[in-house]
Image (cartoon, rainbow, N blue to C red; front, side):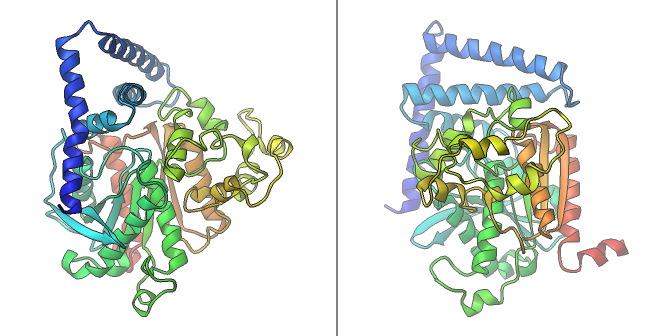
Length: 443
């Protein structure tokens, strides 16, 4: 039995708990699970309507629908972990809902190799191509949930509106496959695009990487890894002659990315704590991604446990920010509370820029970045910090803030705000492609 067949059987098996549980709820509507679900729905629905109606961010009124969905999902994740002792139920539910949307671009499924592993990528080719580049897209989901197959509709419409080829990566998920599995899968996908540019009908100097949420994290980390290895394959220690001729990545598209694990007590984490993702969700997902367990869940987001490891971005970007909203800077308190210690596992994690790109000491020579944040998002500030950090170190950056919630970049055919962002991203890609400036000026 091939690994690909095994993966397909595993996907079917993942949906069995969902079918059984839904059947049980349908036939035994008085059971406790249904009551819990109903309470969760009513609470979430009411809370999010109030949030949006009295909201100061001027979000679309329909934003409460997306927020309610996320709230119920978080509740079901916790329930599935308690009842089923794993996350297969919530994965199956999310993947099933994702596939409800249609698609507008032809899709080809391709199996590629990452050292000794096989992974799948999905190639989207729109009918109209105005940009001969390629976007390697990395889906979000806290490194643990969702799938490239589930993003079929979203990426299909994205390819249509950007008018370019997109390769979506089915990277391995945590906690079964912790860091660096997902990152190396995405790196191998970029390698595959480089090696197959002629077949894809794209140009080697117009390859972009991008993703949303945890996919934004992987995209930023991938940009650093590609810079550091100069495009060399992962199974070689030094760049080979072939990789030396490969151009740098053309750009990185970061949609409301997860970029730091230093503090969950800063501005947007507190100000937007009633929105998604809840600050309490981050440490568990980050720990699962890093080591496959919740061993470090108490470490992430807690400055007092940083082992004297204060990231450079905090002193160079955050601490210099004018405190015009009465927000108290944590830097002095961190220095007082942080226990002393060098070379610990905690230090190694917090100092690893491939895990937390915003913790990097060196952010020079990175590809141009388009950084998008949502106003009503707990991750809003770290996106702005990263954009500012990159600018301080000489990178070309376009920063965009949209009055919406985390995860709004989907359903493009009905979402005007998301479509407008795609138009801006399309222009960004055109401007940062070889010959793009002159092409745009001549139109």
